[in-house]
Length: 137
Image (cartoon, rainbow, N blue to C red; front, top):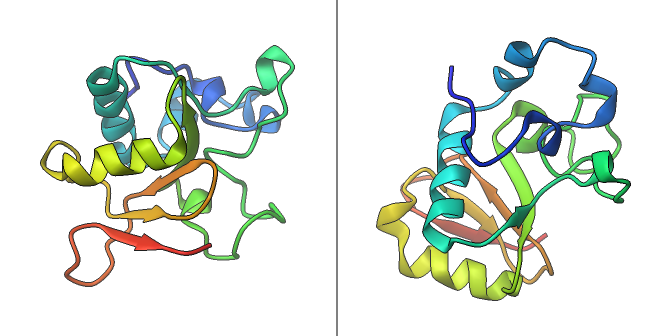
């Protein structure tokens, strides 16, 4: 089981899941997703913000979303532990997407990214034979 080096579990799950064992929570995620967010954090050398609920922030569902969550599609990759939404300090979402596209070989685990939104969405769900698919919300 992979545990992130640069992120705490509370940054990836909503508060209502925090009563569950930490190992169980890490196990909700695709290991490739956890590895790639660490690789991206190290490569950019900038803070990445996913969930902020623990510090009183508004974000609690940018990582794992329970199956009964009303946000996103029924089959959302967030509900399978295969997607994250985030911001990178000092960069626009488009700058981050451009960086990932330019450096795809560093991030082969990223299979899809949402475009034309003010945050970064990455997921590890393959889209046909396309190495990296950009989609509209």
